Image (cartoon, rainbow, N blue to C red; front, side):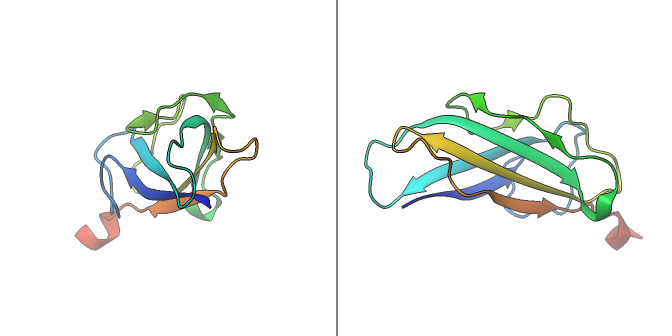
Length: 112
């Protein structure tokens, strides 16, 4: 089985907020069956939680990159919570992995 694990934003597992308008995303493809598994492509999507703003999607990107990847054209707004997800293609299958993702929330409310 192939899945996504260790999903991070700016190297943080559970970010409460990020300090940059252009956050970078990281993930790891994990498997229990194929030893020489290689990511061949990915698709990354970010959207504001609660319908504030539009989603930004990369489309399929042919790349092995999976560490500190920027989503072209995406700039985070302050005091906005986001949800991001990614799926990958590998040398093991023509089908992508299931989407994996996490929330990034701004902690401005907790600082007040």
